[in-house]
Length: 80
Length: 80
Length: 143
Length: 143
Image (cartoon, rainbow over all chains, first blue to last red; front, top):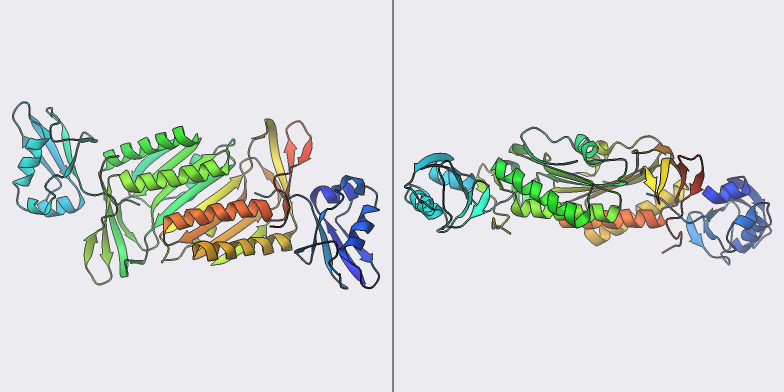
């Protein structure tokens, strides 16, 4: 399956990009995406267990993914 | 002394006027003004002890008056 | 900037907001009171507001002073309109500016509640059936 | 009328107020967040806001739904701006309309607090000394 990963704010700055595609095996979970991102240059500035949303809903590491899902890494929010 | 009396809202409607002058003896108090107004036609629709302000400050019946004072009869307020 | 006024022209909210604001204030809280189409189940065409203007402005200025002491607001403006207002028109606008949002909103509530309870302003409701009635909302008693 | 939007153009408060209002609502409460000239003692030139727009709008719509259930608001609009904002510019506007003023102000506080805590929006402060810093105001944690 192919999923889209979105990065925001300080996370996007740390990794030098705001969006990428990942090819994952069948029955992939959020943990697989977190591990893939953690292996990228600059990822050491992300927390070890970042908040993640799948298709705009907060998810946990065991959440199963489907082809076409959008996985977003959510830094601490600061709107207003 | 001469004082100005001001009437508002339902009080002005009851007495058919919103402002009048009263000539009072020396050492007059608020009570004298209240009594003078109570004797006017339509005053029966005012409460027996209306709130009164002298020169924009709430006063009591024993408050002494001076020439030129403005005595206002204040109905229950309802701004907003 | 602090100001309290009785006005007879339509209230310009954007202008009041600019007046209360300052660069040190990140929060502006605004309350607008408008004429409702119904009150106590009766259909309303409009409200005729009148005021003892000098005393109302004095009382509203005192309320701004109290809010300033309690909540350390940096800017506060109250405008209350008098005359005949149609449904939907703004009768009262209160604007408060503060560096922090909770103080701004606390001060807003204080000013609105106190103004309604204490300002020497009256309203005569005009109903759709042609009748009119003085509204007794407050006690009129001094604090 | 209920609406929650991320916008990139300047926020038009008067238009939002008209949008939230209705003839049955006598009270409109408004909160405006603006860029402050100082934060934590540092001089600020501006703030760059960014958002995960789809999720922020979803969360803000959920907050309006919660406020509607809790306070029975008749109208509610949230706009949050993104991009580089100068000192004094409006970053967030919340407008609530209700028949009664206390509910309007309670709902306003709820919506403002929840939006700041939960909407997926970030700010990069630009300081007068040329440096920039990501502001960590919220926990980012789901409820």
